[in-house]
Image (tube, rainbow, N blue to C red; front, side, top):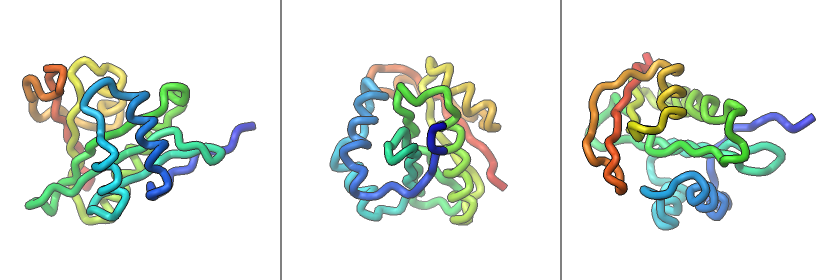
Length: 152
C-alpha cells in the first residue's frame, strides 16, 4: 500500500525538484530558478506541493494580483508525468481555492492553453467558466483561455 498524498506549503529546499518538475511538464513558458526562489522566499503567494512518500509529485502556485482584493490568479499547476491520473491536480487546485478563501479572496482566475484538453477538463469539472481568450499568449504563439471560478 502506498503512502497517501500530502499537500503542504512549498519550502526553499524544494527548489531543485520544482525545477525538475517544470522541465518535465512544460516545453516552454517555464518558471525560472530566480522566480521560484523569489516565491519560495516569501513573496506574497500561495505555493503548495503534493508529495507522496517524501517525493514531490506536483505543485500549484497562485499569485495575489496587485490592485485586487477579490482575485487570486493560478499562475502554474504541474504534476509529474509519472504521477498523472491519480487526482493530484484536483487536490492541489482545491487546496489553493481553500487557501484563497482563507485569505479573503472571492475568485480564482487562470489561463490555460486552448489545446490542453486534460487541463481544460479538470477546470471545467471544478466549476471554472471561460471569461476571455488571449490570442498568441504563450511563447509558442498558442492562444490561452481565461477561466474563472467564484469562490464565495
